[in-house]
Image (tube, rainbow, N blue to C red):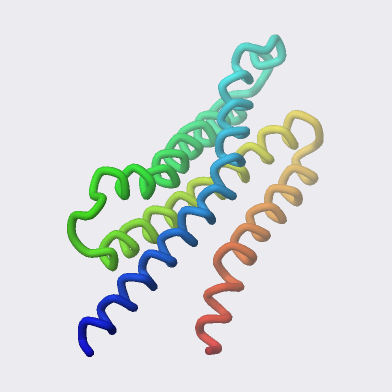
Length: 153
């Protein structure tokens, strides 16, 4: 009987891994589009007119996008390099942590990009409002709501 339980556990881990990798396929295009946008920005004529603060926020967004890309792609690479070595449980744990960290950096990058664009287009009060709402939306929908639901169950 223990062999059957272990086989079922391995199957469950395999299904969880497929689910995780499918979820990463949702996040990665957003990171890629943002990264492409950020790579093009400094080469536009308007970029020479940005303030020092806007340049700093741009750089934060760029670096956070790179970090998000690294972390969101890492589970796939880790899985390929460690395929059939060691525990699926360990693979899932590490991949889950990498994916969560990747979404944190993606949220930072997107919020910084919203600040940059809004600051170029509107005054400081609109920029603060829109950036705050953006950060709040990420904080609540990506982290607060799932953690709140987990705490309730």
